[in-house]
Image (cartoon, rainbow, N blue to C red; front, side, top):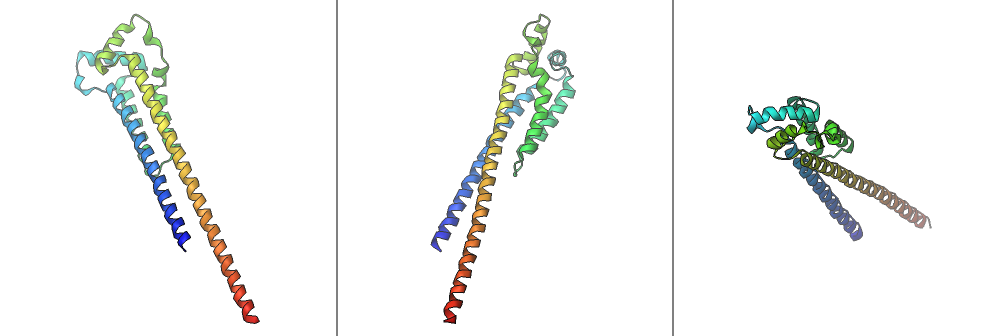
Amino acid sequence: METKDTLSSCSNSEEQQMQQIQDKAKKSCMVSFRQLHSHLKLLSNNDLKGTRTECGFKRAFATLFGQDVETFTGTMFLNMDQLEKQLDKEEFQEIGSMAAFKVLETQFQMFIKSRMYLDDEFVVMTRNYFLQYTQLAIPEFRDTLIQHMESVKKSIDERAKHKEEYNSWVNERQMQTTEDKVDSSKALDASLVDTESSGTH
């Protein structure tokens, strides 16, 4: 009986450990998400509403992103909300999280891949307004964005890996329990047979 108790207490502490690893992975996922979120909020600076800087930034933004800033950031915040909902779920779902991440990533593809701001003269104004508005130079904004995106993607992968490990551990435990039940019922049958046969002598 003692070994059974030891086994179950072992599996309990193991389960707690597994749970802690998953909780930790979720936390780091949310930290990455929040860093990306606060970086993207630079594209929506409420303090500069109605200023010349905002006006110049709107033109600069349309040049860089191929879309007006209100439409783009409106969609961006919706996409961010979707991603947050997925990442914040107790029961992590890799497919949903990755899908929400891809939507956001796709939204920024044109800007990330664009090289137009690196050389042309007319872009000087664009650069200046972008810097004044976001407090970051365009290449710096872009590189930090890529960094945060990669960090979120990596943390989603990490969570998926831990979830898989946890699921296979649970399956193993269930199989073990089933085998134990089969063994004990076989032992019970055998002892019944023994008592029956000894009774017939």
